[in-house]
Length: 399
Image (cartoon, rainbow, N blue to C red; front, side, top):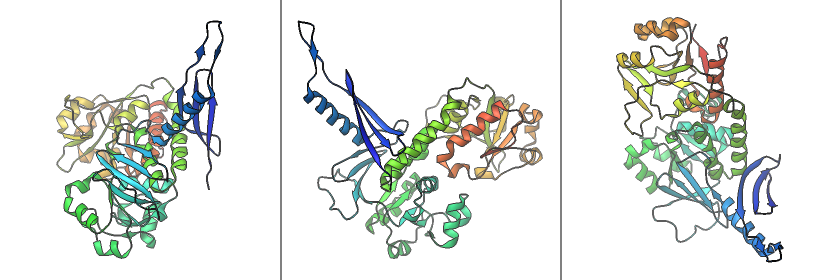
C-alpha cells in the first residue's frame, strides 16, 4: 500500500501545491497566484478567501494529468474516481470497477473498468510498463507467443500458462478471450489496419485501447507512458514515482557537456539496402542527449515515419566517416563479430568506425523495454566517453 501526500506552501505571491510520495519525493507540483492588496498608507494584506480559492485551483490543476514530455496522451480525473483519458484522437472513460457508468460521455468514448483485469496485450512495447508496475497478473492473454518475448518475466508467464497466447492482433482467438473474461484489449496502431478485428472485439463487449507510445519522439516521453498504465491499474502514484526516479537517473548525463562523436544506427535488409532511423526519431534524440551527433540522411520531408530504407551508396555517403556504428539487431538478429557484419555488406569495411574498431550492436530485448531508455542512453554516453567500453545493458562491442 503506497501513500501520497498533498502539501501546500502559501507564499507571499502565490501558492505551490505538491503531490509527495511516502519517501518525500515530489511526484507533481503546480503553482497558482493570488493578489496582494496595497493601501495608500503603505500597508498591504492578503485575503484568506484568496488563499483558499488558490488552493482549490491548484487541486483542480493537479487533477489534470498533463504530461511533462509526452504529446500523445493526457488525462483528467473526476470526483468518484472517474478519469477521461485522451490518446491521440481517441477518448477512454476509466470507470472504477463496480461503479455505475457515468452519463453524458463524449461521443465514441470507450468505457474501461479499472483496475483492468484479464487484459489481452498485443502492443509488445507495453509489456515493460506492466512489469515495472509489478502487474503482470492484470494480463491474461498475449498477442505474442513465448518465443517472441525477450523479457524474461513475459516469456516465463507464457511458458507457465500464467498468460495465454490468444493469437496475433490480426487474428485473435475470440472464443478464448470470451471464455477467459477478457476485460480490455490493448493494441498498437497496427490494429487500425484490421478494423474488422477491432469492431468484432468491441461487438463482443471487449473495449479496445489503442496505445501510441511508439509515436513519441522524445525518449523521456516514451518512459512517461507508464503513467497511462498507472491509471489503468490504479497505480498512478507508483507510476509517477518510477518515472521521476528514471528522469533523476539521467540528470548527471544530461547536465554534462557534449561528449562529441558521431554515430549511425542501422541494419542491413535482406536485399542489401540499409534501414536507418530518421533524424526526428527517438533513437536519434537519445544519441544527441548522450552527447553525440546522430548521422542520417535528411531529405527535409515532414513525416511521421521513424525509419527509412536507403541504398548502401547513400548510407556510405552519410556515415562513412562516423566515429561509431550501432547495428540494430531487432529485425535482422544480433551480430557478434565484425566479420559477421561484413558478410552482410563488405562495403562496411571501408567505414572509419570499422577500421577503428568502434562498432556496436543492440541486444534483442532493447525495443521491448521502453522503461530502460535511461539505461540505453547511459550505454551510448559511456560508448562516447570511455574508449575501453565493451558492453553495457543494451550495447555490446563487436569483436
